[in-house]
Length: 290
Image 1: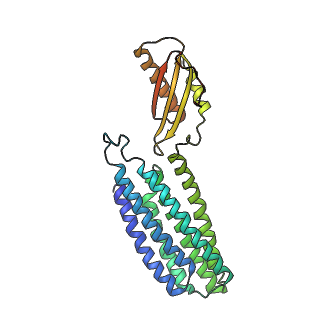
Image 2: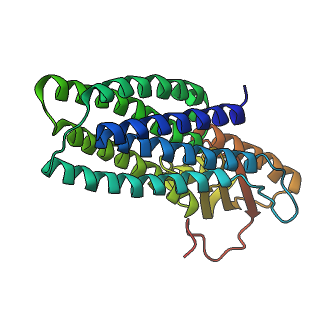
Image 3: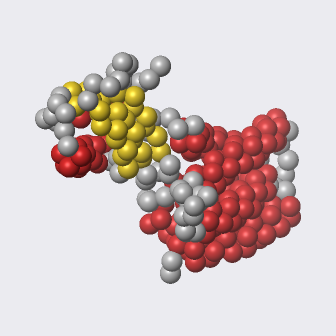
């Protein structure tokens, strides 16, 4: 089963869970179940966006789109995390209201639906586990489904608390914790995708470290006018001017570029580099051009 098929199956599962949990939520009067149904509906929509972005990313590059549609998955992750934050904020607001004004819930339905949701969420989690390790777009959906699996357990626990102890406040309280957890995840993904879209230097890479490594290669005087960014989570690009210690032939600079490529790939996981070799032509040799 390929990635597209796994995403499609996960969409179907989440739509099915959303319908069942929503019906149970309105019947039992449980805010936790209603919020969980919204999470599943949101997850199905997010997975649909992920599937569409995945299909786009597979399209070939053209003369007008030389990068292809590779960044579509980053845009999808950004959109999904934004939607996640908005919906979770509304659920959090309603949960605080219910905490101040508790209402009766059908505890038996909460326990049954919580167990049901956990099983089906776990199936979706296993479907996307492998892809989540390789793709930020899929990772957003994977983390959501994983949090929903834990939310389902929390709902079942809430139902047991109401059933045996009459703790009606436990339902909105757990909704608050679940929403807060999801919001925290959403901010993390939102920040990472925003950094990629704004072409910020990838986290964990220091431009000064690149300078030190490259200038340690024999024949190189300095590296300057550096630009470093990500196209996707996996593709990191480096552009720079490389000032040479002596005038070299094109063949010699090609050999030197091979050395630079190996250093930046092994040390910083930079897999695309564009280097302009020079012999004392630049008046400004600052690392970052002002």
